[in-house]
Image (tube, rainbow, N blue to C red; front, side, top):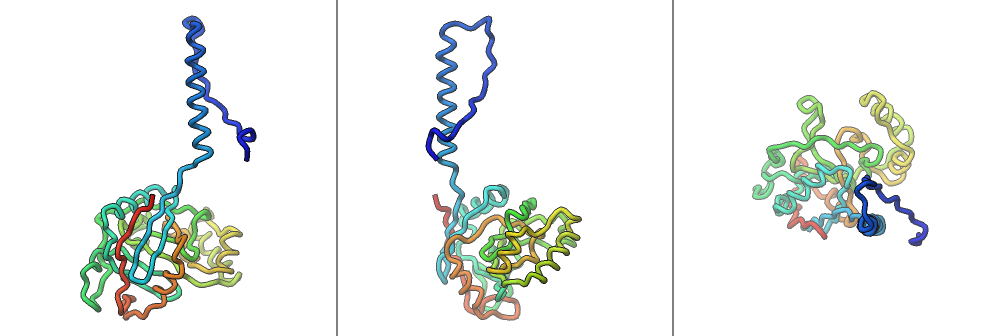
Length: 251
């Protein structure tokens, strides 16, 4: 789009005609020119979404955070800046489903020890944005306590998971959509885009409407695939530790 094809409406300023002088008009024109330039710059150069790089012992995973889940985005960025995720394990890995991390008791855990029972001492208000963000392959979502103790579906302060999932048939998706419609009292349902994605590429649609999805993997999905295939014990902890070496906010 050329500059001539984009129009910006300028805000109107209240004028007191009785007190206006000849010097007033250049000042108004200058203010409008500055605002016009600022609006044009915002249109041409929109704010870039934040990305976080996870350097793991099995390769790098780059995550893009969604701007319409600001509570989760800002909390995640804060924890990364505080090095909270550095040296933590992917403590829960389920083949064909997801990989989970963020428990501080995994940082110095002995081999084979049960982990995944610690978290931050706060929770985050749910920001479920369906159908915009769903549990497609590569989705990044917040873990949480179950509905019985957490009916508001508030998110864990630190633990999150990355979806792998599987493909689903049209009939299976129809049944899951009916269940979602019932649980949400008609306020949520699968879009055509979601159904098509789950059929072709996979994910975990049974989690939709239940957990906050706040980002997605934009590079390193092959690394997620490798991690979700590792051998695990009876508690879903990888037998050979898979660790986040460090997490970095990218500018």
